[in-house]
Image (cartoon, rainbow, N blue to C red; front, side, top):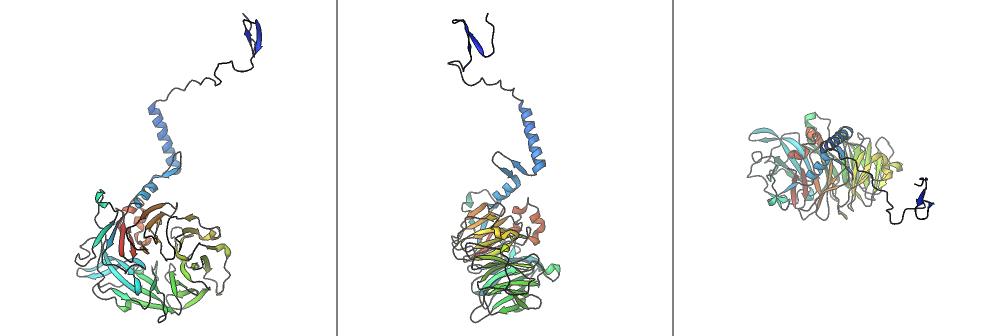
Amino acid sequence: MPTELPGFYYDEEKKRYFAHKGPIPGSSRKPPPPNPPPKADSSCQSLKLRQKLIQSRELWGNVIFSRKEKFNFQSFYQKCHASQPMIWKYRGTKRIANVALGHVVADVSSQHGLTERDILVSVGANGLLCIFPVGKTEEEVDPMENHKVDLVWPLNSDTLPRHKELVKELGNSYGSTTCLASEISSLMSLRKSCLPADNMSKFFLITTLGSENASGSVYLLDLSKPLHFGASVQIQEFHELASFKQTIWAADCDPEGSRAAIGTNRGVMLLNMETGGSSRVFDCKSDVLSVQLVQSGRVIICGLRNKAILTVDTRQKQIKKRIDKSLTTSMSSSVCCLSSLDLWDQYFLASSMDGSIKLYDHRLMQRGPVQSYEGNVNTHTSIKLGIDPSEKVVMSGGEDCYTRLWDIKTGEMLLEAKFMNSIPSAVCWPRRGAFSAAWQDHRNYWQDHSLGAWLGSYEGIYYMDWL
């Protein structure tokens, strides 16, 4: 028998050795597959998967990684829940809440004595201001004197196996209304106050635009005294802090409630709310349509009609300040709303009159926005932003009469709903400080009915809740 030589094969017919130059004709070019490993027992595979999930939970908390992306199941559930609200419309509230809305907890005097109640403050056309009592049940608000309601969203509510009972009754304002000398331009609740702690959430700062016959004015609405529904709001509840012979567009106060920044058609005024004295801290030719006092009142963020967003240091005394370009940016249209975040005090939201909504880092303004929120529709209307107490979502209305809700961190649109035929121009959520325990408990946040949102338009007042 011929001897085997490495790299050669022996041909029996030709009685000689030939070198291996390639695969034998007709044979497969692919090597035979290796023998498959023995299958593991199913219980063993389940144990390995469980160990992997436990390890991921220990390393990443609630975040679980899939082949495509990572998920936070708690956040995913909250987003799904936020996209499924129920919305009611209150009859007989037309044209009384299209400018602004505010919420406060105040004492109300009734036949049962003095009780603490939710109060809704609304601002409408022609300088109209109304104060409404709010109750959770008909026992708290007389059913003969409250506003009738209609469920307007979801549209197919009859087919949904969900609880449809209204969780907020809106009482009649009776004579608790007043008309100021000119259109009201802004309404904001004071975050803190130099007064005792039990009164610190019962004050509102109100500004009027001004007209040919009246100067633009700044008022303080005091709701610390017991309210008597059935009698007109007395003039002593309004305190005029200052008036200016210029148009007032916006206002914001510092956390201590001692100073207010006033945005006008000539720049920014800084008002001492205790003495009534004022000084101009920024002079410009463009209207200042929105202002925010941040960093304990040391810095004012200004949104201008000429699309610019800039910051002013209140500690500088000169009027014509040299603006730091690193703390300046611009939007695609006039900046109509600024809203700073309390939990992340270096960040603020801004919206412009072309529908753009952006999130900025005050420290890196020159680099542009850090997040954008797409889908809103606007061309020229000044529409306010609403931020929920836990600062998870932002809400805004559009000129197409849609109300939209976005996740602040991701920019994802959570809700796009049309339930009215006018622009949802006013949004109000209860302030975070009044419900600190509720918003910290993320599991119960969307189920807490006290944290529902109030909306206003020319058609009336709406209430949005998550059941």
